Length: 193
Image (cartoon, rainbow, N blue to C red; front, side, top):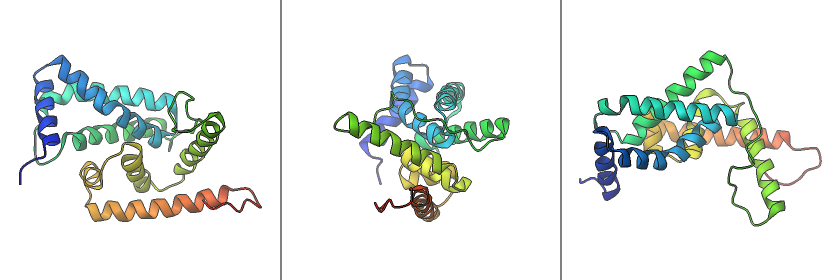
């Protein structure tokens, strides 16, 4: 089986970055920054921490890039393993599961108008807040799958789990999130979660 054109392109890009090609380094940064930032935001629930940790991840990636080896693992899995390690270290230092702060108004939310933007922002803040109540394994999977946009296979590689295990954890997390969101609804709010 041959690697996809996308995988071949990523490999060429990473190989160029490994030898110091500044354009390739910038392209990797531009390609992965939004995904790493969203992952950090979901994991920490705090805009400032997410920004700091994302910066830290890319510094670590640059420091380790020349030692990166292709071993049947995509670059994204390696990158998100570094991101995972950074957030775990941060949480150990802070001794917290993450402090929640409302999301930055500058974060894009796809909406039609100002009222929808406010509603979407409030809903996103609510989801971010209840995500903190998930068990650690579920928070990790949700952050990688939906925060970073990784596939099941990429998430499995980043966490060292099987794809089936990731799917089970994801399902349990979604069920738990739904329960938590329904429990947060005010009395008499019959709208479904």
